[in-house]
Structures are given as structure tokens and as C-alpha cells.
Amino acid sequence: MAVPVVPAAGKYRRGHDGNSGAFRHRGIDLSHGPLAGIHWQERTVRFAFRTHARLVLAIMVAAIGATGMLLGTLRVAVRPPAFAQAIPAKPQRTRQGSTPKDDRLPPPHVAGTDAIANLVEAGPNGSANEFTYRHVEFSLGNPSADDQSDAAEPLLFQEDAVARPSPFDALLAKPRTDASSNRAPSAVPRPIPGNSKMMAARGTPINVSMAAEQPAPHIKRVAAMPKSDVDVAAFLAAAGLSNADGHLLADALKEQAIAPSDRVDLMLETPASKAGTAQLAAVRVLRDNGAEAILARSDAGGFQPVANHDLFDRLAAEATEAGFHAGGVDGLDADGNVSQLRAKYPLVMQRLEKENVPPAVASQIIGLARNCGLKLDGDSADAHSIELIFRTRADGSSELVSARFDSGDGGKTFYRYRPSANEEAEFFDDQGRSVSKMMMAKPVANGRLGDGFAWRLHPILRRWLHHNGVDYAAPYGSPIVAAGDGKVAIIGWQPGYGKYVRLQHDGGYFTTYAHISRVPATLQVGQYVKQGQVIAYIGSTGLSTGPHLYYELRIGGRYYDPTSVRLTAGTRLTGQRFEALRKQIDHVGRISRYLEQAMTAVPKDRGHLSHVNFDHANALAAPARS
Image 1 (tube, rainbow, N blue to C red):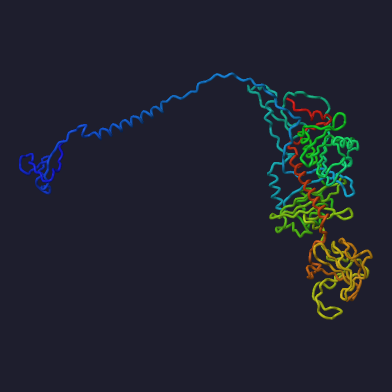
Image 2: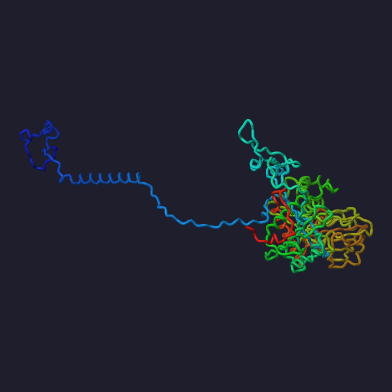
């Protein structure tokens, strides 16, 4: 190969054409022109391994690397799958055991129903009485919207449910030959006589009994959560049982009384006919430490411990379900005051009617809210929802036990409590303040309002003075009652007041009754009086122009109009009386939790619960069969 190269500086060679200083390359004379000053020479470089060793080595390395990559790719693509060698093993023979069976399935848990429970409680005189407790909770929103939401949710027991064909109908159906087809026609459900809601398929009857159907006994559940020791015999007598059962149960429990920390559940078998008497079937005792004991009637007539609590839970669910459907109360139309309540509180009464709340309880709820200054109707209602517990006696009379008014950012709960046997029951908050009574604006029943709380020209002093109270004119000797519960602070005389009485109320305010003629002989300073109790009689003592009452209200050293201020006038419990109220609040909490448990134990499969006779307690105590 011939290439032009630049010679070493200072050397001169003759060109190929023999002319001195001339050089030609590919027929072009390069000794003239711009390149005339360059001296050219031509040299031929031939291929040799010595001169091209690096190039050859690079080519060989690249070829070897490419070949290795190609072989690796082909090896992965055509590699056969690896198989693990099978090792023969001796099969192990195991003995199959059957699944243990219980007498009944545990009760299903469903929600969305108001609970009803029967409880035996001790009265003020020590006697025990049976009550039916019920828990109700509802909102004060738009009733139509709530009705639509209730309709959208599945009902617990829906009477008008559409009957759906069971997948077992095709298995139970008797095959028939169809002339036009080789297939056996599918089973067509048909109504069961006497029950249009249930469907049945035609099939071959199996194990048909022709015996007459015997009505199953009803199960009734009665519980006791005493606040003090209750005699077992008195407890069973209140539930309608005999003294013999009480003695047998006391012997089985090895104690004659039920402790306040215990809870006792009774399962009673009530006959289908009213002629028979109820019989105690089973008992469950829950101790404060969590221990549980279940006793059932044996063949010998006594009670013995049993181990299967699932059957007791199932029967408890059946009894709760029966009480839920049989525990209705009379409608609101039974009270003559209902029409007035409907006109004044339409929304609340509509919701109470929907929840089937007795009229006496409805009146107590509205009165309690009014005393607390809570507005229940309208867009600006103070309470968004109401939660209440009430109880009904055997004679049908009902009373409110507790009520909670929830306003979204908090709530107020009030409890019915009777401080002593000679006092009326009132509603208290958790701080011991009574809210059942409001201060009376008119402590004289037949009084006529005269001068009010304002500036006036004094009829005797003949100058303008502020009248710090109100006057009620009434006949001489008319009784004056205490405007609220309180303590007699002063029985005295002043020139302006004349003879007067001053009461100090638990709310921290004072009321004064002046110009009186006399006080009852038994009234003394420091004595505690109740609202409505007679404390004085109308007179005309002091600066008075005639028989009348001067009625004055003082709060924190300032005077207020007693006819326009709403103040609670009930008792505020302190000391041992407050501790007794706290025990009552705890007792209501136990009842509330019990009602919640009863609510979640309502059986879901209504109409498919079979009752079991507890005559054989050995079946309950027997171990699970395989």
C-alpha cells in the first residue's frame, strides 16, 4: 500500500519521474502550487502480525465474547426442566373422629331492636316486685326520612317477606315423566295450607307422624340485680313461683339470699293454657368475679349443676324474643292529656307514638325536658336524640327510670330516685341536683297579682321606691306554701316586712314571704321543708295596706322578679344521700348493659325455634357425643 508521508525535515529526494524536486501522486504534480514547498516521499506499508498485533488481539477478544454470550443464551433456552426424584413413603393410617355435637346451636346475634326484660326488684318496704324494663332510643330528626331509612334496612321479622324457592326443593321433588320431553320437570313451590308466606315443594314424606300436635310450653326469662340482699324465696315469689321452688333453689345454691353484686336469671316454663302454673326450669347465677353457675331441674324435682351453657343461652334468646313481641304497651290515646301534648310538641309525640311509649312516660319525658329548659321541637331543638329506660308494673302502670338528651356535643342524663320512703321520687343529675321541681311563681293558690317587680309610688311612704318583689292579694289567713325545697333560714320581724319567713334553697338562692300573720306551730329555724308545704298564712303586718303576701327572690345579693325567673327548686343530695344516689346510678347502668345484651340475643330465625323441656338435666350435663 503506497501512502504519501511527510519526510523528515531537511531531506530532499528525487521524484519518481527522475526530475529534480518534482513529485507526482496519482498523476498529479505536487511540486507546483500551494503545496510546492512540501517535500513528499512515498512508502509502502505491508500487513504483518508484528505491525497489527493489537488490532488482531482486539478482534479475537470481541469474537470470543460474542460467541460466549450466544452459547449462554442458547443453553438457557433449551435447558430441560428439572424433576425431583420421587421417594416412596409408607402411608399413615389415621382414625377419623366425628365432630362433637351440642344439643342446640348458640343463639345468633342481631341488632336493631329495642330490648325488653323482666326484672325483680325490692321495693321501699323490703318487698320484691316484678317489673318489665324497656330501652328505647330515637332521634328527633325528620320522621319521614327515618321511616325511609328503616324501610331500606332489612327487618328482623318481616311478615310480608316474599317467599323464595329453596335450592332443596329440586332435591325433594318427586320426578315425573313428561311426554313431550325426556327431562324431569323442576319442582314448583306451592303454599303450605294455613301459611301463605311459606312455600313447599311436592315430595315423598319421610317419618310422618300422625300424633296430635302438642303445644310447646312458653319460656319466660326473669332476672334479679338487687341493690341490697334479697331473699331467694321472696325473689321467686315475686316471679310467681312457689315457696317450695325457693327452698329447693336455696339449698342448691347453698345460700338463702342474693348478693347485690350477683345477677340471677330464671327460666320459667309457663304452660300454653292459663289454667296451669309456671315451673322453674333452670337458673343461672353470675357472680361479681365472673364465675358462672347454671342449675337445672332434675328428674327428682331438685336442681343440679349443668355444664352446657349454650342451651341456656338459646332458651334465654327465645324468652327475649317472646317478650319482645308480647311486651307491647297501651297506646298513647289512653291518656286524656295526650291531645294537648300532641298540639304543643308534635314532633316528640310522633316519635314517642312510633316507639309505643306509654302516655305516663311520654308526659314525664316532656316535663323533664321543660324543667331543664330543653327545647325538643323545631329547627332550634336543644336535643338531637333521646335515650330512655322505663319500666312497667304488673298492673300496667309505667314510670320513667332514666333519660338522656343528646345534643351532639354532649348530653344530659337524669335518673329517677326516691331518697326515702316518705319522700316522692324525683329526677336527679349525676351531681345530685334535682330537676323535677321548678320554683313556684305563685306560692298562694288563691292569690291575685298586685304590684309587680318595678318602680312605684309607695302607698304609705308616698315616695318613689323600687318594688323588689311582687304582691299577691288574698283573704286573711290563706295558706302560703314554700316555693321550693329548702331550709328555714329566718322567722322574724322587720318594720317594713312585718312578720316574715325566709327560706334558703339548695340552688343557692333565697325566697322571702312577708306581711304574714303567723307560721305553723311546728315550723322552726333550720327545719327542712318541701315544695308545697305550708310555711305561713296571709296577714297585713308591717307597712301594708291590706291582707296580702310580699314575695321576694334574692340571688347572690341581688333581687330578681320571681314571676319571670326559672330556677330548679328540688333537693341537692349530699353526704350519704348522695352516695345512695350513686348506687342507684350504678344500678341503672347494670340494667342498661343487661338490656343491651338482651337486645343482641334476640333470635333471628323466628318460627323455627323448638322448645326443650328441662325435665332431664342429665342431658345438659352430659359430655358432647361423637
